[in-house]
Length: 353
Image (tube, rainbow, N blue to C red; front, top):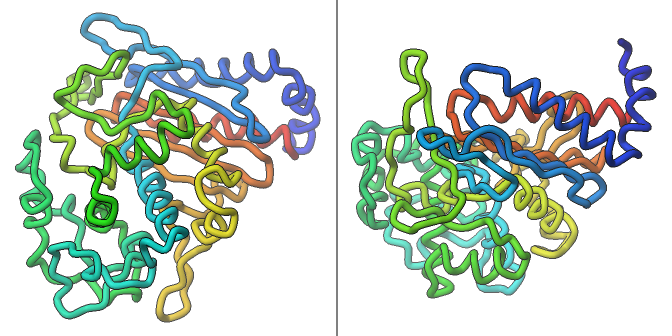
């Protein structure tokens, strides 16, 4: 069916809450017929209002515990936009400077004679290698590591390129930003985000995850091994840090997206900077701002970030021209949250044509 005709048919759907809910639910249920599906958290916002939030499948498979809209999932690298926003808030208060060198902030990490700025860390252009690329990190598995132990895995590795000359997705950079936040505020990364973001914004189901704490209604992560469902591999939650250690719900994430875009987290000018592609030294743009990917998804302009961590994968996407935000969280690393998001985007964006 031509897109224009499909859009004409869907327009009444977008104007009728019951039909909209039914259509979204139907699209998600269709996607969950895949054999790798375990559980999902799904939410949609339209014109800055959360219009849909629901859990699907199982939060925990061994005891058959159902997922609901309050079930918390690990969100992996979606964490990075929270870290970026926390840094930008301190920049607005003149406590940090994006173009100041990392070593200004008493972070014990050797930059090998190079000028590495906070902006380089935020945009994955520092040239520092990512600790998650090395076998030494994989062997640490479930261990809870100190900053010194974690960063020690890469502190003596050669830079991949001169800062600002290339883009390479990098978890070390965001981990270091978490250390900077702790040095400047005197709080742990977890406490700082809770006190300045989660609490004030009412994100009651968002937190730094923990293997030790008892967290009601938290999803267990899974993977497929030889065609059968298995528990995810263990990981010490100190290790992803400010690069990927948060847990949340889809509802909280779309509410966060609305707050970030509407001046409740950072000033509008700061959000504009967060959503401006970084320019490399050779004048090449990279499709990444400050903690956010900037590109086309599903045929439309999009601000987004995905996340992947043992047993989980996730996506939070905002389509500014349509006023639509979609969050999908999966607790099986083999079941693609992005594929579900793509099906919902196709449905909802068609109604905007």
